Length: 288
Ligand SMILES: [Zn+2]
Image (cartoon, rainbow, N blue to C red; front, top):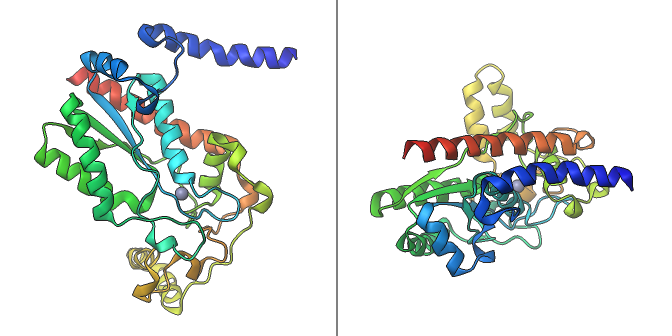
């Protein structure tokens, strides 16, 4: 009981400090657009023109992580940034561009041009309201092309400025790309109730002969790794053997040991991303 009490107090202290800093919304936590009234957004816009838009996906993440892993990571990280900076977070889509994960039940995907269009039209409303500084927090590699297109379109055709927030955490182990040690650790820290660790199983990775040849040659010519990675995450119709279900037995893409995942590693990764974003937002605020 006493231990719990002390833990609560420790959690409360930083909240109280942040709360007193943002006096208008003391102890309110993150500013999430859908949880605010139009009056509150109007008040916010008198002093602030920044907004964070998380980009995620609904795609298979192995047998142990939920389909919404990328969405939850992008959203939860954005909320942590919001708690420390007071910047509004506006989730618009829970679905992303995930075609190469098709073949596992529950996967959703929309085309990059559809995703760009839906996001752009929504963001046009935000810009009309007065938002001028738009930051994307992308939680899914497949969305990179969408993020790039959106940033280009916003910067070239509107009064607003759009940038991508840095999502690099600690250096990942080789090929620990999807639902592996790093990502599972992040989910253990951010959404522990959705992680089924007892189902976490190292996948059998079945690379094509072409991929194996490239991997072998890449030992002497590391640049060839580019070709190997270009083959991964491709649609089944392209016949490259790079669709998720073609080379991974259970949807996880990793060579790392899944028993070495830890909440601490997850926290370390999330903290790096959040700290970098907070520093960037503070610098941008000071600059203009
Ligand atoms: Zn993911």
